[in-house]
Length: 101
Image (cartoon, rainbow, N blue to C red; front, side, top):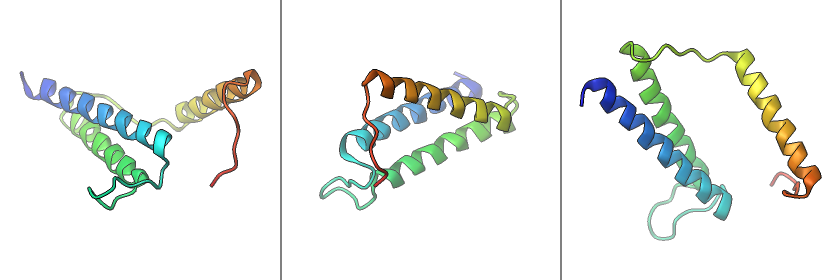
């Protein structure tokens, strides 16, 4: 395994950790904490994992393994697409809208 392969495995690891804490946020809430284990809220843990992911992305970019720039236009399009499918799921009755807590 070379450095690039190592960093890619770390990227996958961080993505997996984001997946795990995202599901915990969904199931137990953003403000939930693990009893008797640590005092960080799930939202804090999610933020930490996202930061870790961006750290690995930065390393891949800095070392020339990944040509990547955040593109505002693509982000806007993604937000619009996600919102369009959210609205569709609402209309289909597959999710329920709720007030922000």
